[in-house]
Length: 127
Length: 110
Image 1 (cartoon, each protein chain N blue to C red):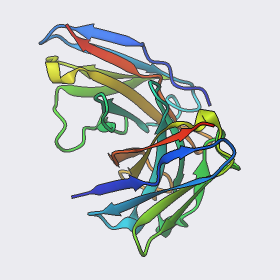
Image 2 (spheres, helix red, strand yellow):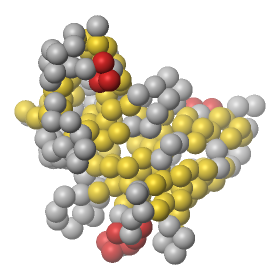
Image 3 (cartoon, rainbow over the protein chains, first blue to last red):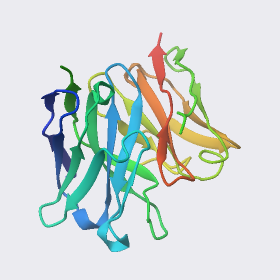
């Protein structure tokens, strides 16, 4: 059974940092892209960024709203993907979801869709 | 990257069919067949319902179907049931090697 379990959320002051973790199980971690998606309270979904699967380089792409402040990394030996969030702003307050990305055919250098989601972890940025 | 445009709400009676639209641009929806749809019940994580415009993952009811014409994708729910009441989001890959979600549609079964 595919499982994604996020942790590390909490209350943090503006300008500070926080690191989220997502531990995966039930599938060959290195064969998949891992993506972070967030949802502000009462709002829609927003894509944050993803790390490619190792077989296509494991490189990372970010949304413009977080580029330069957030860093995604993966530890394939532990099946964990991280989201390091720096210089946090009030507008970063959201539930952060870890998702698995997949494709149907082709090299799959970027996922076509997000097929499994964690339960999410809430990050509240407030003074 | 602006969010894809969806109607804020759609409603229907049990047994009816409804369609949710998702409008983007030639740089996202119109340029790629990588449109997916997600269902989200209150307080829950989103669930993949349709991928690559019109494909259903294993376990998703065949009452859900997807299509695309130009820059607009659509999700149709036929034989509407009470359990279909939820928020629905479309998503597309973009030419910037990013992803964009739709504004979300609340489906109400009246």
